[in-house]
Image (cartoon, rainbow, N blue to C red; front, side, top):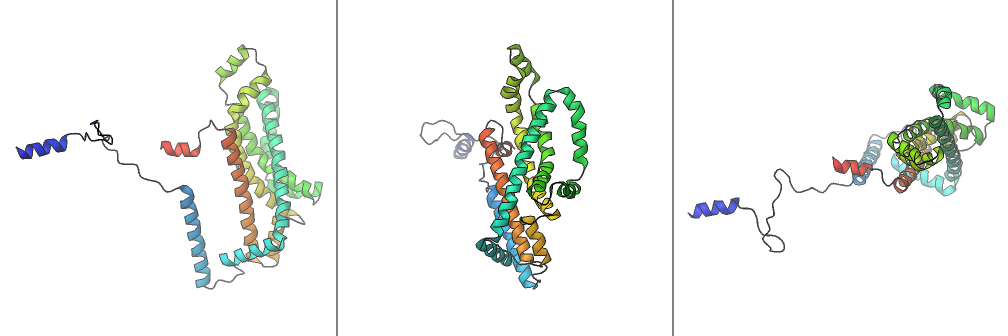
Length: 293
C-alpha cells in the first residue's frame, strides 16, 4: 500500500507553483530547458584572437623572415608608427574620399536607372541588355582606359569605383521596385493615385530591403574598386601605398595598410547595416531568422 501511494505521487503532476496556488506546472514532453547561447561576436572575436596568436607563435617559433610573413606584433608596430606620423592617415583620407564619392555616384545612377527601367517598358527593352553587356566587361580592364581618358587624378578612381558598385545595386533595386504586390498597385490606382504617388508610397518602401542588400554588397566592392584604380595609376591612397611598400619590401607596412582597408570596409558595412535597421525597421532581421530556427 505504501509503495502504491509512492508511485501515485510520482505520477501526479507537480501542483506547487511559485505562489502556492496549486496550479499544475507541466513541462511539455520532449522539451528541455532553453540553453544560453554564446553571442556571435564573442565566438568570432575569440576565433580571430586564436588565429592571431597562432600566427605569432608560428612566425616566432620557425623564425620566418619578416620579408615573407611578418609577425602580428610587427604589423601592429608598423601600423602605430604610420598612424603616429600621419603618413597612413593622409593616404587613408584620399582613398576614403574616392570611395565615398564613387559609391554615392553609383547610388544615384543605379536608383535612377532602376526607376526608369521599371517604369518604362521601352527603357527596359532598350537599355537593360546594354547594361548587362557592359557588366560583362571586367572592370580591371576598364581602369587603364579610364586612366587614359580622365588622367591620374581622382576622377578616374571615382568612375572606376562607380562602375564596380553600380551593377549589383542596380539589380537589387530593379528586383525591389518590382516586388510590390500587383493587387496593392491596382488598389492605389483605383483610388486615383498617380504613378509617382505609387512609386513613393508603395514601390519604394517595398524595395528598401532589396536596395539595402545591394548597398551592402556595393559598399564592399567600392573598397576593392578604389584599390584596383590606385594600383593602375595614382600618386596617393592606400592602394598606392601598398605598391610602394611592396617595392621597398616593407611587408609589415603592407599588412598594416591591408588592416586599414579592412577597417574602412567594416566601418562602411556597419553604417549600411545601421541605416537599414533604422529605415527598414519592419523587415525581419537575420537575428529574427536565427531565432525562428
